[in-house]
Image (cartoon, rainbow, N blue to C red; front, top):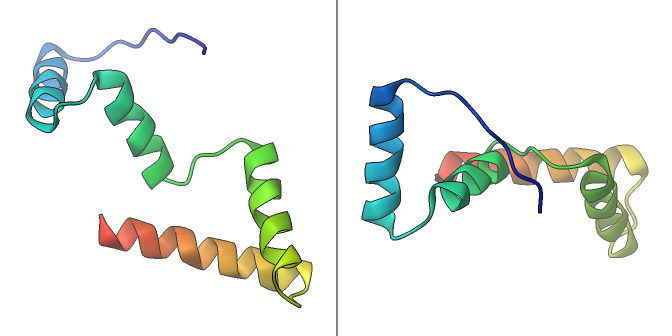
Length: 79
């Protein structure tokens, strides 16, 4: 797993620490969940998602991408 150093304001850092304690998660876990929420994936992960969708359906590539995008939007709306 890669490491990352970021610079946050003191207030933002305290808020992040408080949120991680309230949720019983690490700061890294919160950041990772946030990236998932915003649909940030590697190209390989995105391609794999589309490939799996196409394997289970008769969709064209464009249709499969549209389904994947709609699923990401649906997850974002729930959070």
